[in-house]
Length: 115
Length: 115
Image 1 (cartoon, rainbow over the protein chains, first blue to last red):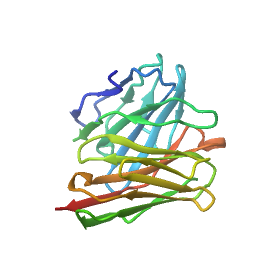
Image 2 (spheres, rainbow over the protein chains, first blue to last red; image 1 turned 90 degrees about the vertical axis):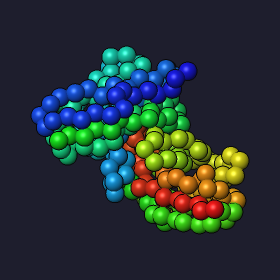
Image 3 (cartoon, each protein chain N blue to C red; image 1 turned 90 degrees about the horizontal axis):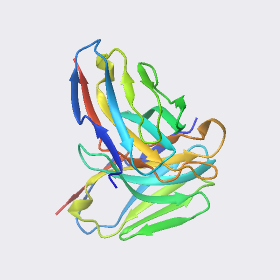
C-alpha cells in the first residue's frame, strides 16, 4: 500500500511552459485534492474531486486544470507556467463521511520553480 | 468563509516541557478537525482527528481537545522531546453548503524543542 504518491519531486520550468503534476492513490479514496503551500500563506486549495468525472474549483484555481478519469489518479496541469506558480504542491485524498471528509492523507509534495 | 487561526506562530522550549498549541475557527459547522505534523521539506503527517461530536482524542503523548461551540481546539504535547520539533497544522472539514468537500488550514505553529 503506497498511499498517496506524487511525481516529480522537483521541477524547474521556464515561464510559458506547460507541465502536469501527477498524483495517484491506491486506497480507493473518492475524494482527492490539490493544495499549494507558500511561505506566510499556508495551504490553499486549488482544485478538488469527489469522484471520477467530478471536479470543482478551490480557492486559487486560476492557471490550473484538473481531470479525474479514474478513482486512482488526479493530475494537475499548468497550462502556461508563471513565476507566481513557484510553490510546493501537495496532493491529498480521503474517503467521504456522511456529512464531510474523513481523515486526509497527503503525498510528499512537488517543489516547482518557475523562472 | 471559514477562517482558521493558530497561536502561537512559533514556540521554542527546552526538552521535557508540556506544551499547548492552539487552533481557533470562525464557523462552528464543522464535520471534524485534524492535527498534522510537517517536517521541513516534507509532506503532512496526520496526528489526530476529532469528529465534531467528540471532545478529545489521544495518541501517545499527544492529546487534542475540541470545543466546537466556541470554535477552539488545543493540541497538548506531554514531556516534549527534540524529535517533536516540526510545524504543527490544524485543519477543519466543513459540514454544509459550500464548505462541503473543503478543508481549511491554519498557518501552523513552528515548534522547536532544544536539548
